[in-house]
Length: 80
Image (tube, rainbow, N blue to C red; front, top):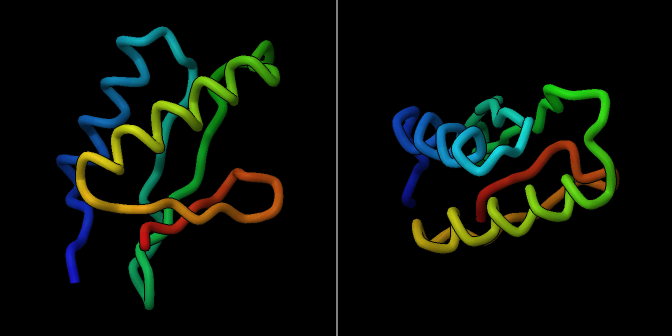
């Protein structure tokens, strides 16, 4: 089973920052599946910013050969 490293999470956060997206991804736990949560760093983040975030996350983790599974409000996700 492949796992996401701390370095990859840091790289993902740097890509978000470089893209001007005001979000941060946090690695939460690895029991069963690795999980992360999304922290919004700006009160002005809206639908457009969240859509750009999800597109970037999907592309980044796809390169690492992961598929993402989100909770209902898409603030948490798991790598499968």
